[in-house]
Length: 170
Image (cartoon, rainbow, N blue to C red; front, side):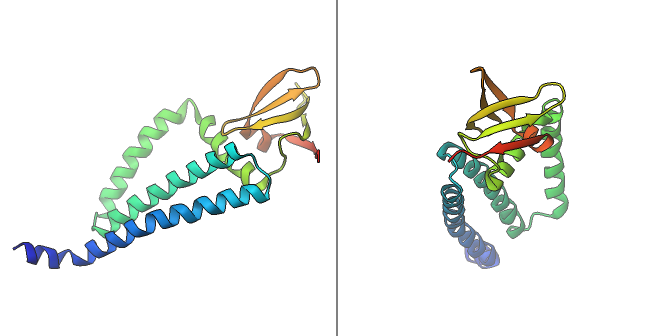
């Protein structure tokens, strides 16, 4: 009986083994690409690590879906599970939608690298224009210091919504 079951599920077992072999390989390749890109773009190590963590989480989620497909989980069941997860996430982020947009903006800023630590910026805002120097770029916020010495934490999504001029400092 066990041999029959083994033969019946042999393709899924082999595919699962292949996926489990590919997981560390793809995680390693992704990590190296992100870290090398960060070095080339001269991005701080802490920021590279945060972006790497986000990408690895997305990669893990992808592998879970691949395994579900391999083992024949019906699309309807996957969709029901996804809708449940997204409902919980939606409720959690409804009041704090800016968290997700700040993470997304942080990833976009990582790869586009519009400015670096030490650069001088001017944020054009009609209510509160800001002249400052970039001190650090985090997952949610960018820390800037004004000419008066005041430390300001700017949400990353603000850099995608406002006009910002950058004076590069070598």
